[in-house]
View (cartoon, helix red, strand yellow):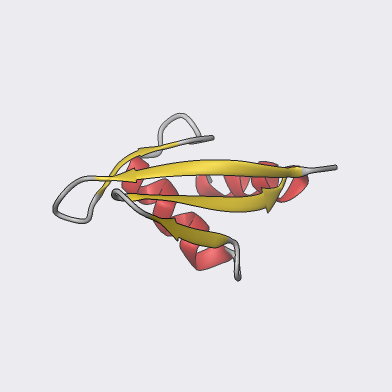
Amino acid sequence: MGNVMIHVRFATDGSVNEIGERPSGASAQTWFNHLSRNTLNCYEALSGGRGIFRIARDQVDALKASCTQ
């Protein structure tokens, strides 16, 4: 299985404004925090208040399930 790219967009105050693959019921900030705490070396900061996580599809599915419990 390939990697999924989860795009993140930040507000000017540093909070998460938008994030991909977000499970229903989780806020954008909660999903970002969950990904940050439960992955290692998967995040890449980009310019313009953006970033991406590169995570294997099966790991994304497992992270979604654990975020909504």
